Image (cartoon, rainbow, N blue to C red; front, side, top):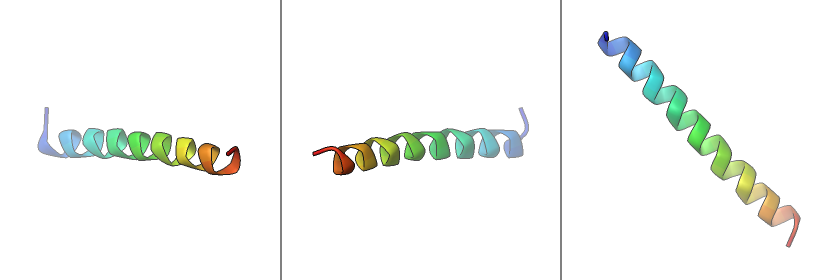
Length: 32
C-alpha cells in the first residue's frame, strides 16, 4: 500500500466518522 493510499483512506474514514457524529448531533439538537 502506498503512503498516499493510506492517507486517502484515513481521510475517507475521518470524513465518514465526522459526518456520522455531526448528523447525530444535528438530530439530537432538532429533536430534543
